[in-house]
Amino acid sequence: MPETETWTIGRLLTWTTDYLTKHGADSPRLDAEVLLAAARNCQRIDLYTAFDEVASDQTRIAFRELVRRRAEGMPVAYLVGHREFYALSFYVTPDVLIPRPETEFIIVSLLDLVKDAQRQQRDRPWQIADVGTGSGILAVCAARHIPSAHVLALDASPAALKVARRNLRLHDVEQRVELQPSDLFEDVPPQRRFDFILSNPPYVSEAEFRELPVDVRSYEPRQALLAGPQGTEVIERLLDQAAMRLEPQGWLLCEISPSIEAEVRQRIDDCGRFSEVEVVRDLAGLPRVVKLRRNGR
Image (cartoon, rainbow, N blue to C red; front, side, top):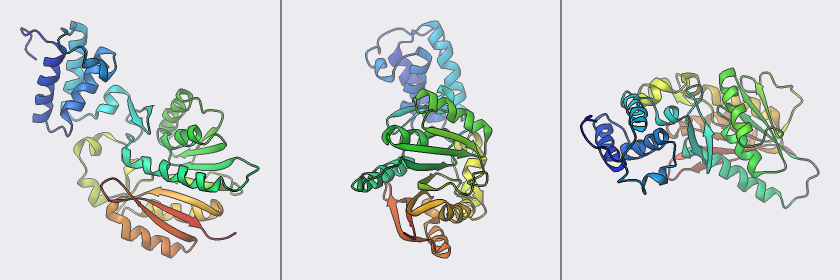
């Protein structure tokens, strides 16, 4: 950004889009808009009515620093401190994964199952567990969209639970979402049972991890991504533990990588505790979520 130029909002966006394109950004125009809105402390939509407005020195200084860090690879969500998920805004830091649209299929599947089950009378709240809650997106959305739900949100990372707690306060669901440090269900009393277990667990294999985009591999928490050599290690543990924690006919909804679908199906067969197995495909037609119903009455 040459100092002698007159920099309007429109020119800043055009220059930055070109600059980020040269530095390999996947969505340079969107990145530029999000970062400029953050530097200007406004909504993205407000930029469109301010194209001819000259940016203040304060805005340019803040924006220049954000763009520099983005060009180095820092994800936009970490730079601005928030990301949208299922039409809600969530606080995020490098202690948690950045929410992605594919994970919304867990919430869509959950709400469909609850809607179908509401034809039966219930005299108690829905008991839901969110395993590996991270920023708390699944727990918050479940509580917001299912008024009768009580959610137990688990994560082995104390830093992630701090982020989740902030999001519980942000969306006013602290009274119905309980946070607990735990590696899967290891520290949860064995007598607790759930109607639904939700999870976006680590499912990236070592080989797949090496092929991830640099901004993911370098900045997002490795322990929340990498499962082990095969990619199924955490899911395999989760299957066994979920089968013991679900109510009869309860459901496990788990995100997977498309590259390990066959291996996950084999692990489900080996477990032998689920009577219904359905794979939900994302908008690209790729297998994204497994829906598993526990055996029993």
